[in-house]
Amino acid sequence: MKISAILAAKRAKNPREPIFSFEFFPPKTPKGEESLFQTVKDLRSLHPDFISVTYGAGGSTRSKTLEWVETIKRDHGIETMAHLTCVGASRYEIAGVLDELVETGIENVLALRGDPPRGSTSFVKPADGFGHAGELVEFIRRRQDPVSIGVAGYPEKHPEAPDLETDMARLREKAEKGADFVITQLFFENASYFDFVRRLKAHPDWNCDVIPGIMPITSKEQIGKFILMCGAKIPDALRTAVETASSDEEVVEIGIAWAIRQVKELLVGGAPGIHFYTLNKSPATRRILEGVTPLPHRPHANP
Ligand code: FAD
Image 1 (cartoon, rainbow, N blue to C red):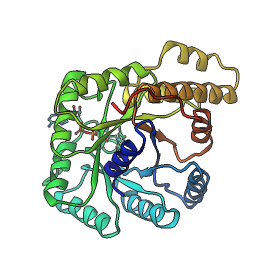
Image 2 (cartoon, protein in one colour):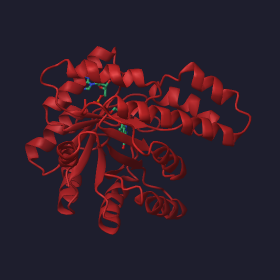
Image 3 (spheres, helix red, strand yellow):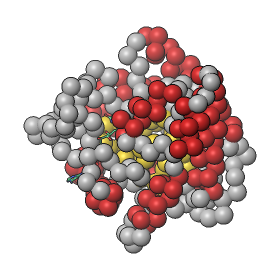
Image 4 (spheres, protein in one colour):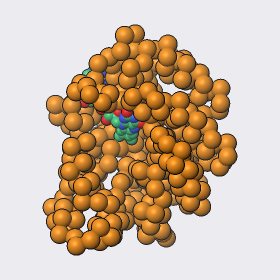
């Protein structure tokens, strides 16, 4: 089922019912694969609306993305979404990936530009390829593939963008070109998300759901990584709590408690659902979802 249809069906049935999704990456080793199979089994009982699988920049895991979205959908009966990037691929190669996705019945694609491959500092548009995610969205729509298209959004601005206003204008272009919904980069301050959605909705033609992406902090080292990777703002209270924690277990508890508070507030504030960056592990995501159930009262429909 298309994610656009899942969102519409939930809205029609009960506007207060959020959607939940989990993100995995294709493991590189047989042990990692075994562990991901277990994670999928563990999280299945939480009835995610869909599972998404990332697309590696290097090339080696690309066919694995297709394998995993097909396997999860076929063997577990859970709807899936394949991430797809423009990195190092001509439009001919991208067309081949889309053909395979459509042939195997995958109905959802997260259209991304992708990060530069390891060792490169900036994204280089491939020969006969695409320079921005918007071009990929346009390409998929021109092909008339029967898929729902998601795109990435950055409540705290994409690191390469000169400012948030310009970045949001680019996001609106992706929507105009045919994206159905947005999944955000991780963030720890909900005010960023609410402000982002409010500014997008100020444009009368904006009609995409913006699903917040959430990832709990589970180690002290992650703080530095998140800042480096995506420029995430770490609120002082969270940073101090993590940095002064006396054990790894305490850090995990702090991270989960923070995420539960974030998810509750986001849903009460009207977010259409939550996309969990799981890092292929189940315990933290399970604890967060169990921590927000029963779901808080949502006074309004989706933003
Ligand atoms: P774009 O939308 O193309 O934006 C990239 C930059 O270019 C931004 O600064 C934007 O403001 C600017 N821009 C956009 N359009 C134009 C234009 N027409 N002219 C000028 N400037 C423009 N990476 C992976 O490699 N694999 C994954 O599976 C993956 N999954 C992700 C999932 C989510 C939910 C998110 C939020 C990110 C994911 N990423 C993934 C990371 C993503 O690829 C990077 O953040 C990348 O740097 C930007 O991708 P984008 O699709 O947002 O690019």
